[in-house]
Length: 152
Image (cartoon, rainbow, N blue to C red):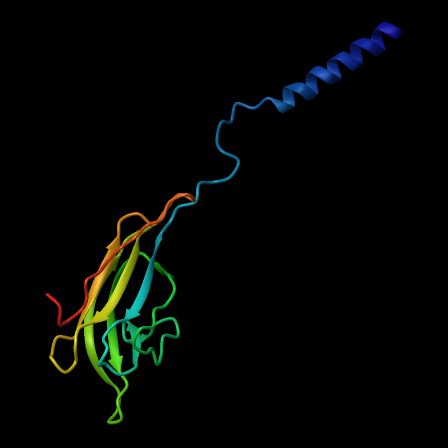
């Protein structure tokens, strides 16, 4: 009887250990697929009025009454093609002053900068992509845009 109990216990242990072995080598969680990029908006035109920032004709991420020298944080945007617009806020009423079609790629950062001079007729929009948004903890990424309208 004692041997039967030991044999039964041994079979039970072997059965349970077989349950723990799996031939399934897939990861425990599905891989995350990134389908977004990030956009930062900067008002860098010294003589331009406050503006509203639009994407596809509607205000983008509550960016209204954006003043000179104001920049948004990075805003997550789905991959795709968009019409970016700047609407000037003037006493005579709001007016669309800049528009550009731009594509947002997966896992990229973009700086959209309104620059130039209204008085000189050089107001423009620069879209500056950053090639690698991932930066190691002990590193820093620097991106420089020369946007001064009166400096060569």
